[in-house]
Length: 291
Image 1 (tube, rainbow, N blue to C red):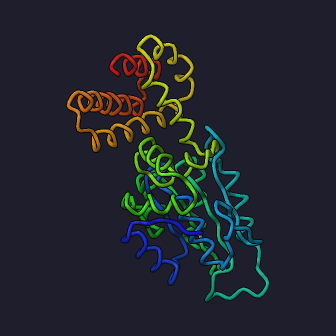
Image 2: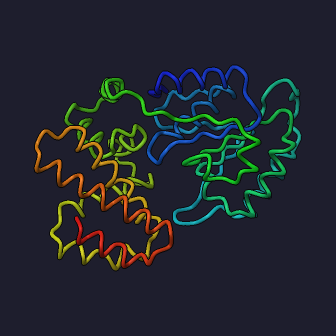
Image 3: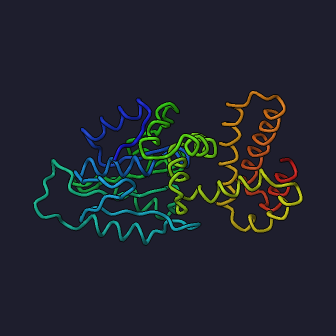
């Protein structure tokens, strides 16, 4: 399966696949395509055929961990992973990779789970690679940062994304709309085009569109329900920010640009307040009034 990468990211991926370190942390914002890139690396290292678009590789010595919606990854999950990594693999050699553990959204690991994982990262099995994805290096403990190789997902040029999605059978209008809604993030655009409701940001995109298309009174009615789902709130704010940046990039109308600047400023302020544990309901109420 073909994936579209920034040339510098592509070079880093090729270098890693040719000489894989035993621990890799792939970083990038939500919707940047971290998971797709991780699966691409897994398939290349383990030599798994991924002929079916969107399919995840299957292999007897591949273990995947990802958080359930709205939940953290507990220490028990890492202990189960450690048991899997301690199993011997018939015919494996220390100079080759026979097993991979992939932890998606490692920023959702609890501190206890990260500390437990640290023990494995310090002395991983010789025939094993551990790959993590996260929103940034600072999203995991410094002790983990120091024991992994980092690979940053840079946004690919838009002029490479359009022909890529056209080759998958999508129309120009569908692609333009998905890139606009997804802020040109390839992972999110792909999920929107495929109507992948399991992607965490697809639901956030639906909420963001609804908020922007509603009147103030209608937006305020949404506050109570959204305030009970803090992660969804943060995701909605992230998508609103991406939409605003895209709109400002393309807008030639002064009045429209002023509105998008207001949305971007309000979104940024709300995100800062939520990250500092300000009351969610109050933050959302102020946001809805400022939009």
